[in-house]
Length: 429
Image (tube, rainbow, N blue to C red; front, side, top):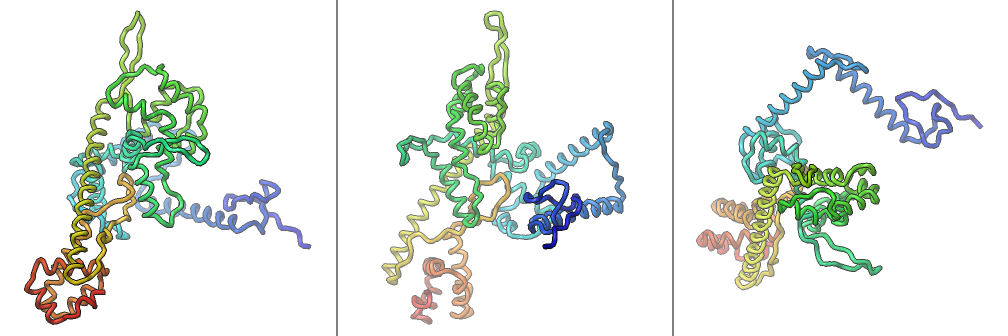
């Protein structure tokens, strides 16, 4: 039996859990060690290549050890601030684009720098519903702020009616807005198993009693920090610190005060507090309330998001009614059982931070059908085969919708088309 060959460990390899000593490495270790070694080797080469490239470009690389050059540190900090301010200004001054252009660019592998700025400006404007300024770009923080506002919107929403599980335990189901967000994410990312689980985060905040605190704070109520609900929130957080860390990614030190813990939860929701210290009975007493500017800004965003949801719901009802009438008309005129709710084309490719999980295009299914109907009308003069060629690229639902719109827009050309192809209902499929 040939003994295993041992070699000294080096930073190019990673130790296997089955190794007997942390100083030695078995050559016949699992392939994961070899893969990690190749990765580390690539990183080392990348550092050397980057250093060489920066030197060739005329840059001076100063090694940084334990002793830091205070002057260089201040200069680098000032340079970083100037670069960020220039980026904020460029985004705010970028050219305006529409939703169709934005959605199309999300499928492109490469965008020009100015196109990236235009997409960023559209995302911010569409997310917050207000004109884009350098201050708003900075406040957005690359989409992190809207995620906090969405979490705040979820915890402020009214939970569902109390339900009971199989073991007889009562629990509050998440609001519809949270459940729908989870559902849409799972439908859009069907092959993914690492979903965000918005309902779980909502349930943790709900169990903490954060909603009751936020309702009062959002209404302008001041607190001192010794209220029973604040104390209960802090005690629950400390008892379940591991769960809070795992679900909300927030570390709760056992030595911190209730107001400090509350401040951490508020920070995750895009809120901050301000305080005052009046004299009461000869002593200074500190009162806390939400930052007024934060509340005003977030309330505008919440109102805008509510109007957007109501508008989408109104359009959905209108389209359902229109499609029902469309199906009835097709059945009455041609004996075709057309679906009453054709699919709506949605673009789910937007993974930029700040947008909701299910980004919708402004063009509905019926608006796209109207576009194809105009193309079909233009092709009539080139013959029936040209119209067939166009319709062959569409689904059966879209083909039926195109012919219905065709008849409404240009009855004369439609009559000519039907006269030349009396079997059009059959090849519509």
